[in-house]
Image (cartoon, rainbow, N blue to C red):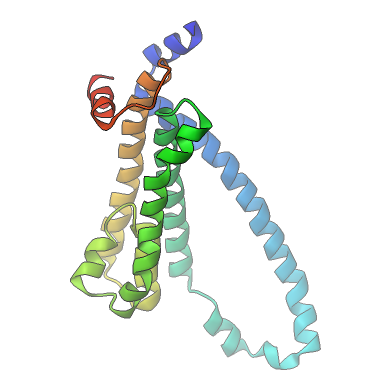
Length: 207
């Protein structure tokens, strides 16, 4: 108890939560990097054997046409990292307001719904990537990791839209960590039932 009190009084809430998110998130990213490296190794060893067995698959134009360009690869990495840490911050906020695993499972439903919405919107947006609604939705931080990449894969996008969307996304990571940190600062010292929305708002204002 004393250690927790010293910790929350000696560091700003958003710094505490952002450090927690980056630390735990980096572990997950390291594991993901290992999987990607193993997959790349498998492709490196498997593709030559496949081409040797099926020479018709070695058409350079077919291979280059199936591969995304470096711009799309860079955009994917930027969106993936931003989305990864944004949703990590959301789940951290959910965990900060819950004291039991059962409460956390119930409270994470809104986060799951936020994840599902851009998946449902992806196909209509790919069919008309330059529509006003498509542009606006791809600027929303919680949707942009999926929708901006879907638009970029379907058509060439103005640079300002990509830059603005990425800016909003990473600003959203900081803002979500800020809110989660203030919830965490109060919630870590409290026990009992899950707080109501008015109580959460009071925690954010007063922490």
